[in-house]
Image (cartoon, rainbow, N blue to C red; front, top):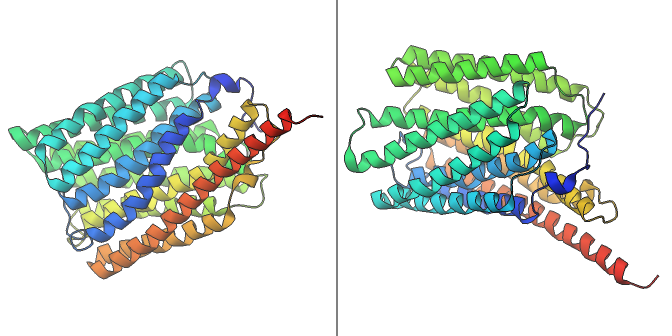
Length: 430
């Protein structure tokens, strides 16, 4: 039997309305910044191999501004809804948000200016945001069972280790105590990108994809196989990076491809048996994210074995961040934003508000075409070291990001219009 999300206990399971708005609003704004930032570093991106500077600032405008804000906001809200638990308190969520934004601004500025004091100062608020977030998420999944619990717990463990590595990297600029700064930086990237964001995405997908498609949830056995492969891939890749054994790192990427294939197969089976026949543009983006993930892992394995040109490292970054994660999260947000708005309206006991009525289809089409064309051009320009192609792709991606902002603002305005009309209806004489 299908198990749609119930509105029972919504007051306890929904965050205060402004909390998701803060996290997702920050992501929408940073999204519009992250694409043009690529144009500014187009000449340096293909040869980027790490280190502070404008390229790392551009990358972190996406990772901290868009991806982490979205992941925090989505998990803090959707896990209570899906698991039937009370949501974290407003005070805790506001503290997480304030610390995250403060740390992100300091870190991105520090990278852009190559300022060691700013990078060091960013560590404390970011670590505080992560500590509060890990505590809140652990409480949500504590006592749970099944693969979802292990996906989430492993993801927040990876996030914790990623922050520890980031703190060590920031301190190393002043103290120079790390034996191999580049190796630790690579481990940080794997922990953050594949460990936290990847496992969180795979875990939440088992809730969100069936909900979006109106389909039966996937079989637990298939989810456990995906988790086992993903966790093994992460462990093997980290061991390879830590020991400096390229073949072990490549093996981790290869196992990651098996995990990704298992995940895609499982989610594809869910979508194939859906009741919702008409699929929106969000599923095109989700499908594109799966392709980008497989390509990114293939490129990562090739890069570990020195089979790629000098542009290989930058290409992996583009495929992972802009191809896999950004495609997936913007696709997911196209369903989450109207869904949450509808639930908030139901909590206020207004007349029924269908999520579809909140969506501006033209805005989503602008985003879809802008994002996919931008991604293709930036990836090609990075691989071939053609800055002009990267600039063109960044321009297309920016247009797509503006389209996505148009969509998000429309959801907000239509929801407020609905609530205002309901309030006026209650005040008018019968």
